[in-house]
Amino acid sequence: MQDAASSPDIDLMRRTAAGDRDAFASLYRMHHATVYRFARLMTGSTTTAEDIVQEVFLALMRDASRYDPARASLTTYLYGSARHHTRRRLLRDRFLVRLEDQADLCLPAASATAAEDLIRQRDVQHVRRAIVRLPARYREVIVLCDLQDVSYADAAQALGCAIGTVRSRLHRARHLLADKLLRGLACVDMARRPTVRCEV
Amino acid sequence: MKQSERSQERLAQSLQMLAEIEASNETPSRVETVVMARWDAMQKRRVPSRTKRVVRVATAMAAGITIFGALAWHNLTVRLKPDTTATVRLKPDTTATVRLKPDTTATVRLKPDTTYTTVAVVGGPLMADEPIRVVRMRVARSVLGELGIPSPAQRGAAPAATVDIDVLVGEDGVARGVRVPINEL
Image 1: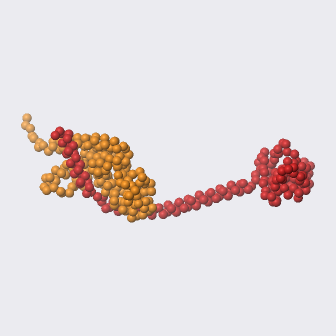
Image 2: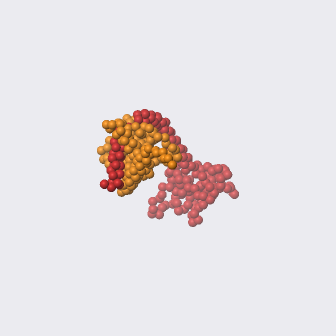
Image 3: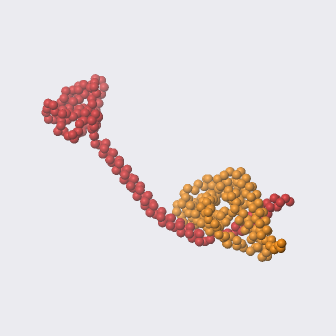
């Protein structure tokens, strides 16, 4: 957890509450990526993540004066807000069928060969899909602790639960994720088998 | 190595890979443009809201002053209802004129054990069967001498500066007489 007293966020938040545009812009530039990545991993959609970033920062500009640094660091506060907006959005869109977001599949080429890139892309795609299919309470801890490197204490504050709960959910989430990945890869292997025509 | 351990290891590698990929993701700049535009719009809206707040405060203050004034006016006006007792307090050496509406009936209840002096006529003559209204007033003791009511010598205690007297008022609103309780002298 950040040291609340020494954090420049407190000063920026105070100035934002007073109507300082530059302070709000600085806050946005410091924290937008954190919120965006969290929302993107939680929803699996780039456009939804962009909407959530907007909603989180609109809420921040409205309620800047209500922020209490003694309760949590600004990052934790933003995670909590992003979680709230993400849940609301997922609840609202639960009956909609999402089109595959091609931007999610585009990965920067880092390996030596095209084959390695393809394998890497496939693995990451499977992991991403498996995470999105996890129940929300397990997805949150995987995203926060395993993908965003948030400490258990901060994750517990952002999720509004005990540290022990975070640990147990993380343990369960990893098992569920490993199961899903195993099954997903098995399905892919089955699909890649050549079809054989049988004569009777 | 067991299968579960292998799968966990593979999961850890995949998660690490995904985290590395995600770390390079940034919000598109158009989102910042939209957010800052909303900020500017909200700041513009705040100005009239401050004006509204000032107007609300001014309205509340005006309402408060009006209510206070009305209450003060109400307290200055003595309204007599039937079967009520009204005491008009005056500063020493002041003169009070009590006007009652012609259709108002006010009965002043006096203490049963009160003994009064004789009525000193101060205004017009007291007619027989004339309806009289009694108004209790607190006046300076010096007024008694001016009305011709002798003040007997006090026994021991210092005399009070004011005296409660009953003013008998005729139907035309003119005082007919004054009477003073003995215990006030």
